[in-house]
Length: 425
Image 1 (cartoon, one colour):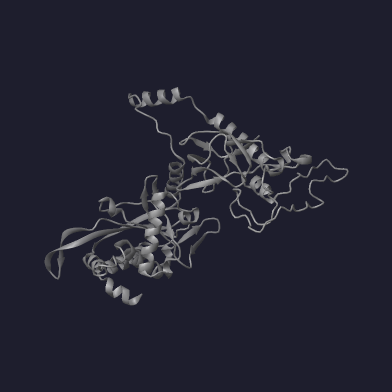
Image 2 (cartoon, rainbow, N blue to C red):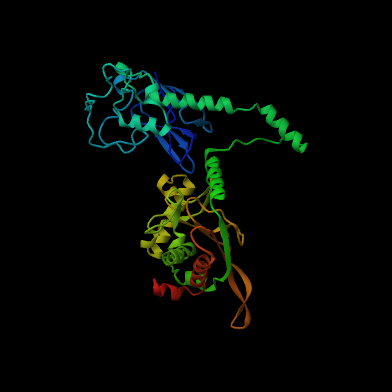
């Protein structure tokens, strides 16, 4: 019998929520066969089985939150030779079995170095018996002392399940120490407000990750905000002029994104991050434009990679692809975490402005409010125009207000006179 413990899914998470089981008790599975869909911070991933055999138990139902290192599925009648994939095969260095494994790998085992697992005569120092570099990496990342482990493999070999078990024991002890009786929590709440609790809603892994990111942003970044009202009539007219019977043309968001990219190329201070350890302001050579998108799982910010190299039509196609992937929960960790600047079109929610929170470790976010008919003075006369509001929240460490205002004004001018800006692109 072998127990598959929930592995580290990346993105800084300590747990995952079971979305759907892909197998049932009694099914026969092979190594690398997908067994479950698990929700990470902002996407859903399929977990491949590291064992071959018969499914004996599913540890949880859809909706169950499983901590990293806790049992996910039990598989029995496993050939000992396939309990774990031969981690020493050349090619794979990833956390999950089956991710990145070299297709040309054979069944050969690499011979362990003659010095591994031996003790120096005349000393009491013990060198941990570990062959797999993956096991060493897992232990190092989780701060597990290999010398404290007793290997369960042949001749005391330390294998991955030994490290996973050590991680699971640590999580269990931490959970027991930090757990407060629910009755005491309710008593505290009632004594403060005098009101009974209506309900308690556990925070999902996604919500915990969002909370951690936003809290860090507020704690670390000295932010400031500038905003400007913009006459977007010409921008809307440009959008309509690009529409034909056979081609809908680039959307408004793609046009906005094109102007933002041009603005970041002109003011690269807003396209970087703060290296606090080295006390340096870093600017990227290129732009991965993050686009805030609301989904059933919450707000996500996938990024268009190398947006500075794309035409407006190409930007439009990529924005549509990312939006569809976001709604389906199929964004990759790279798409979710590679942004260098964020464009947030909160006008789609029918609001005019927002003091947004910077998506750490980025240093700025530009918000666009709804476009609405309003009175506006044009050439000394009152007219009805398509107005919107831009709000730029920026990290005051990377630039002063003058640079932020200049960037905002550049984008605003592009909205008001897009033809002149396109001529310079």
